[in-house]
Amino acid sequence: MCGIVGYIGNKKACPILIAGLTRLEYRGYDSAGVSTIEKKGLSIKKAKGRVKNLNTLDGINELEGTIGIAHTRWATHGKPSDENAHPHQDNSKTFSVVHNGIIENYTELRNLLENNGYHFYSQTDTEVIPNLIHYYFTKDKEKDSIMKFLRAVRNACLDLKGSYAIEVISSYFPDNMIVVRKDSPLVIGTCENEKYISSDIPAILSYTRDFYLLNDLEFTILSRTSAKFFDTELNEIKKKTDVIEWNSSAAEKDGYEDFMLKEIYEQPTAVRETIGSRISNNLKCEFEELKFTKEQLKKINKIYIIACGTAMHAGLSGKNTIEKLCRIPTEVDIASEFRYRDPIIDKNTLCIFISQSGETADTIAALKLAKSEGATTIAISNVIGSSITREADYSIYTHAGPEIAVASTKAYTSQVVLINILAIYFAEILKSTKKEILDNLKQEILSLPKKIEETLKCKDQILEFAKKVYQEKDMFFLGRGIDETVAKEGSLKLKEISYIHSESYAAGELKHGPIALIENGVTVIGIMTDEKLVEKTISNIQEVITRGAKTLIITNQKINYNSFNEAIVIPETNPLVSPILSVIPLQLLSYFISKEKGLDVDKPRNLAKSVTVE
Ligand code: AGP
Image (cartoon, rainbow, N blue to C red; front, side, top):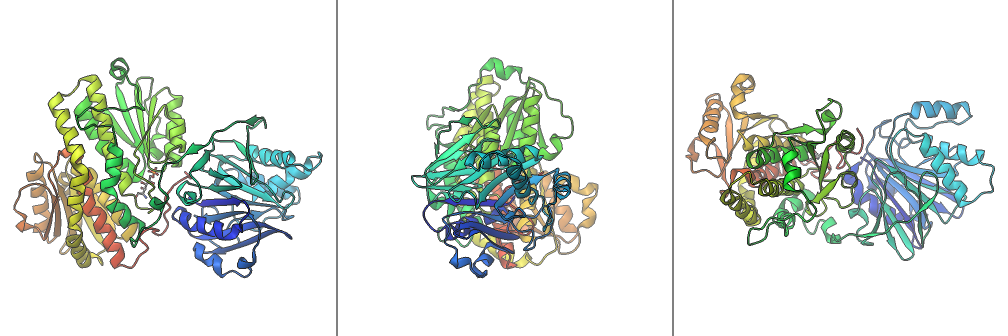
C-alpha cells in the first residue's frame, strides 16, 4: 500500500519523482505529492486523486530542486484529501516526510507532541513523524550536523510502533536525505552521482540495475555520491549492492493496452523462466537453493502453506500435489488467520510462504511466527531480496518478471509451477512416488509453455462471451478437486477487476445451500479437467441448467459440449498442473468484462498491489 519515490542527484527531481510515482501508482492511487529542496527551502505540492493531478498544480513546473521525495497514497488513517496527502511536514516546515506503513501508536505520540506545543493539520498517522523528528532535533544540544539529523530520525523511529518505510529531507541539510524501513519495502538504486529510492525495483529499473536492499532499521544517509548505513546504535555498517537482472522493458506496457493483458500474454515466458534449469531435458530435477536430505524430509510430519489472495490459491494447488506425491499432510492457511489462530507448529513442521511481492504484511508476520516456533521455512517469491526472502530459511524465486497489474496473473501460474516442482523434488528425495509418475509430470511441466500459448487462442471466444455477460450482477464458479482451486481464483479475479459479485463452490456442495440462488439467466462457470471427476461435475452443472442457469465450461475432456451455452476447450494435461491452463480463460474473462464495463483494469477501486499493512 502506498508507493514512495526519492531522488538525489544533479537533475531536476520533480519530473523524475512524478515518473516514478506513475510507475508505482498500482500500490495506491487516492492522492499524491512531492517535496523538493529548493533554494528558498522545502517545497510541497500535493493533491487528492491520481498522480497525473500533480502536473496541474500551480508552480509544479518551476521546481528546480535536485533532491526530493514523493508519495502515492492508499488511505489508511484519514480519508483521501489534499491535507491527508503526503508529504507531511513538522510545524516549523524544516522536515518533509513520506511514509508507507502504519503507525499503530500515533494517537499516543500525537498527544505527547500536542502537550509539547505541536499542532496537527491532517488526520494521518504519518504527521507525527516529522514533528517527532523536529522534537528530537531541537532537544539535541549538539552542533547541527548530519549525525544530529540522523539521531533525530533514529530517536523518532524508536518511538514508532508499527510498520514504516520513510524518506526524510530537511532544509537544514540541502545535500542529503535519510531513509529507513521497518516491515515496509524500500530499495535504493545507485549510480555514480545519483541515488534513486523506491518502494519497489521496477519503478526505477530504467535508471540502474545496482540496488541496495535495506534490512529493517538500517538507517541510511544518502548524498549524491554515497550511501552510508547505520544500525540502531548508529554504528556504521557495510552493505553491498545487488545487481538486478530484470529487463527494464519488463516494467513497461510494450504496446499492450494494459499491464494485465501484457502479463496474461507473458505467461508462456514466465513459466519457462520459472522452470529454468530446475527440470532439465533429461528430466533431472534440481533446486540449487535447497539442500534437504532424506533424513530431514522424513522428519517433517506437517506442512503448512501460508499466503494471501491469489498466492493462497496457488498454495491450494501446491497442497494437492504435495499430498499426492509426498504423502505429507499439508494445510493451506490464509496468513491473516494463521498468525492469530495459535497453529500447531514445532521443529518437525515445514512452512511454505508464497508471496509475489514478498512484502505482504500478514505473510511476513506469519513467517516470523512460524520461525519463532521452530519450523523450517521456505519463501516462494517473485521479488529478489524482498522481505519474506530475507526472513525465511530458504528462498526460491518464480522469476516471472515484474508483475505490475493489481490483479495477479503470471505470478499465480508461475507459483503453481514452482510448488509443483518443489513437490517433485521432495518426492524424489523421499522416494514416495514412482519414478514413471514423476517423469510423466516433469514432461508435462516442460510442455506447459507451449500449452499456455495454445490456451491463449481462446481469447476471441472469451471476448464474445464477455460481451454477453458483462452487465450481470452475480456469477458462480464451480469445480471439484483441483478445479475448485481454480474456481476460487476465477471468482477472485472477476470480483477484483469487474466488480461483479461472484461465488466459487466445490461443485458437489452447491446443493447444500447455494443452489437456492440459482435462477433464470444466472451465469455459472464450470471447470472440469480431471477425468476422474468430470462426470460428477457435469451432473452438478446439469442441476443448475435445469434451474435456468447460463453455462460456460472450461474443459480438456472429451465430453458432449452441446448441453452448455459455451465450452472452452483447453489442451489436455496432468490434473496436478491443470490450473496453469484452466485459469487462463478465467483471467481473460475478467479482463474483457472489465474492459466492456470501461473500468480501470490495472488499478481497480479500493485495491493496491502490495498489501503492506495488516
Ligand atoms: C491478486 O489478484 C490480488 N491482487 C491479491 O489477492 C494478491 O494475490 C495478495 O494480496 C497477495 O499478494 P502477494 O502475493 O504479493 O503476497
